[in-house]
Image (cartoon, rainbow, N blue to C red; front, side, top):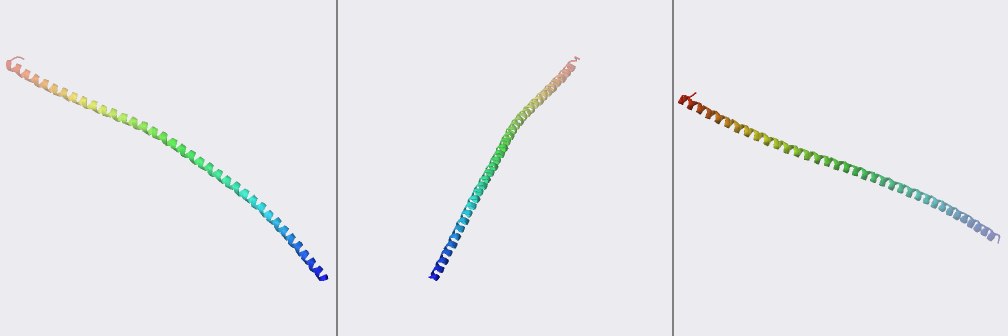
Length: 134
């Protein structure tokens, strides 16, 4: 019977130790769960912060692209205005050239008329000379 009591004490001691180990394991598991939850919360927070930073970066990139687009559009408008002014200048130059050609033609016509008048005058002078009239 003594042996049986010893054996029972051993079994009880072993159960207490196992129970104690189970409690320690449960406590460790709970600590690990708490640490895991904390790590998951930190991870989620970091992911959210990363998304926020990425969103801010994307918004900044969109804003910069819109500003570049606005600047490009303004530049295009100015270039179109300059092109219109250049076309008008070319048109005025062409008109000036046409007027210059007309002036040259009028000058040439006047020179021809003067040459004809000189020839007529010379003929009249000869005719008068032949007639003896000076």
